Length: 522
Image (cartoon, rainbow, N blue to C red; front, side, top):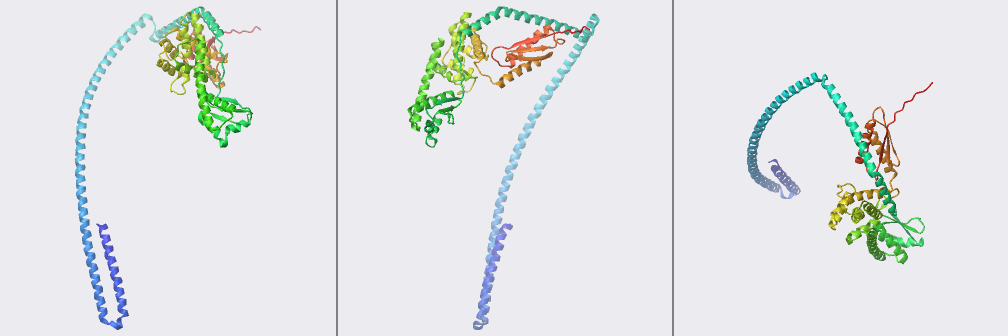
């Protein structure tokens, strides 16, 4: 209401101000013309000013009444809207109260049901407590009778029984382990050593260590400027098309290609060698030569796959699988070329299978394909074993080959002797000295882990990892560990090493127990 009256008051004030100004002007005119017009003009001016003021007052009063009427109408409309909103909210509150009452009734029923179930459960627990009490009385009675008959207390009888069981089990377990080891050694050690030695000697494959760089020789250092090109456009085009970094430094007559993808690096190497020989180096020519290099590399990959198939005698492979095998030439595992490794494993599998009278073709086929997943494991998610199994299933390889590939790292149980041979051949090829590079940090961690596992057993005085981690020698406390217990301990340590560590080949666990009697003659 105050907001509506404020403009009305301002209007009235403005009207009065205007009237005053008019009056002042008229008054001045009257003063100037006093001598000419006299008192009549003054009277007329005064009357005129009074009329103007009266009209202004009437206008202001009319405007005030109109604004008051408008304000009352707006207030009435807002009041009606507010009453409507209040009614709606009251209705909503009533609906919510009704729903709450219904929910409360449902909860009351559930609480009543739970109370009944709780009462039943309490009755059962009471009955069980009574039965337990009766059982405890019966057990106490029996224990008392046993104490009377044996002349030993319950604790003494427990200790005596546990001591006898421990001694008996420890001795029997040690004897059983020794017998089993002696029998296995007598039957298998000589034959296995001869067989593996024969296979290794017969199969000698060359291994080259791949790196992340390739070096392209140049006829002269002037060629470096042509490779870079004006404002670097040639080198930028070559790097963009191949995805490989070109390093042009102070190395005389050479350009270094750097990249983690060996296939892309090989494309860049072939393309750059062709450009150097051709001499025409510009972006359009670079694009043409890179495409030719890719086609040439595809042919090389195919030829490498066919060479591996012919060399191992594995025939009937799908053309796509042959290409994947060829790609393995440009993949490495710990510095070992995967294609050469696969060929070596295939040859080892064939030799061992032949010596054991098994299926040579199956063993060689599984050995050649066991790492097929590594050809595209950088393109597809998953382990190389899972990828390899999917590839072989897609091209309908036999179930025995698929199982051998799936089991060669122990992901599943081998279902044939040929699968076991693939596991053994893979370990032989990987663990052969010089086949794979091993960082100093990994080597030290493996030695520390061996000693940590051995030192964690009770009764161990000190352990030493020797022979590059191929053997761990453990000194036990003779007063804490008996000969029988030492045999069991050696087996437990070996089992824990198998469970917690990953390593090629085998690790020998040797426990040493020594008693010394020292006396001095004086």
